[in-house]
Amino acid sequence: MTTLLLLSLAALAALAVSLGLRYFPSRRERAVRELLDAADALEARLRLARAEIEAVAGDEGRDPVAAAMREMLRQRLWLRDHGRQASVAQLAEVRASIDEARSRIDQQLNQIEQARAPLA
Image (cartoon, rainbow, N blue to C red):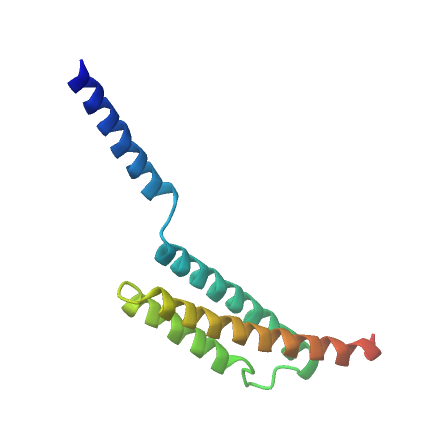
């Protein structure tokens, strides 16, 4: 009876650990997910910025956010190629650079909105 109880408790403990690993991601997994979410948000802002700039300046055959889009692609490729080996600190560094880029885009969008305000 004691052996059966110990085996049952061991099985429950193993199940709890297994479920914990599945439903509570590690710091590294969270960092990767947050980095990808930040990249998605930056891409959305870049697309909005492109549309806003084209609405104000017209489409003169040049893409005003192309460099930022290329940088975002470079970061996504880095994550694909090095993400498995990257430390949490490296992932956080890439995320911070994405957040900084998004902040700069937001500032530029605010300037465009302010410039358009007197026209409306």
